[in-house]
Amino acid sequence: MLLQIHVGLSLIGIVTGLVVLVDLLQGRMRSGWTAAFLATTVLTSVTGFPLPPFGFDPPRAVGVLSLVLLALAIAALYLFHLSGLWRRVYVITAIAALYLNVFVAVVQAFQKVPALHALAPTQSEPPFAVAQLVVLVLF
Image (tube, rainbow, N blue to C red; front, side, top):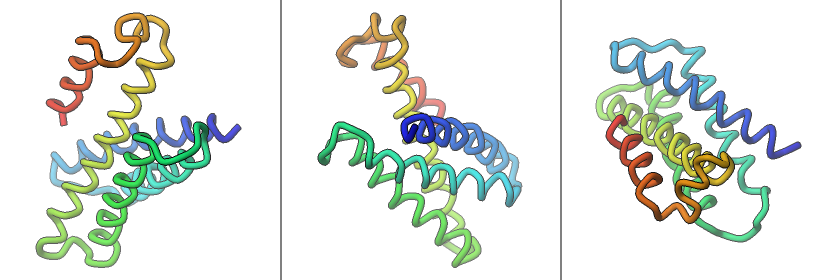
């Protein structure tokens, strides 16, 4: 059950994050979409920690990094109201957190989707690298 919640939150975080990203590119901000993105992305990271396998591993390192980025984004937005340098801090950290969420979604897709897994079973093959490079370039 927790895994389904985690995946659902992640997908909502990605969709709302893409809306927030488009808004940022257009110079606007919708508070509801932004709050939904930040909340679901924080919850995605938090709900990932109790999932097996246990111990500190690369997915948990990404979760910690994401939570640090999100803490900065939340502080920039809600504590410092995007004043001065905090506007840049918000934009950079929010986009970086969204990128990490999409990065993990690509990793999971190559692990769970049979057709993708067949292309890159160890995630060290060119199709995986190309997919992650495309995501990075898009961001």
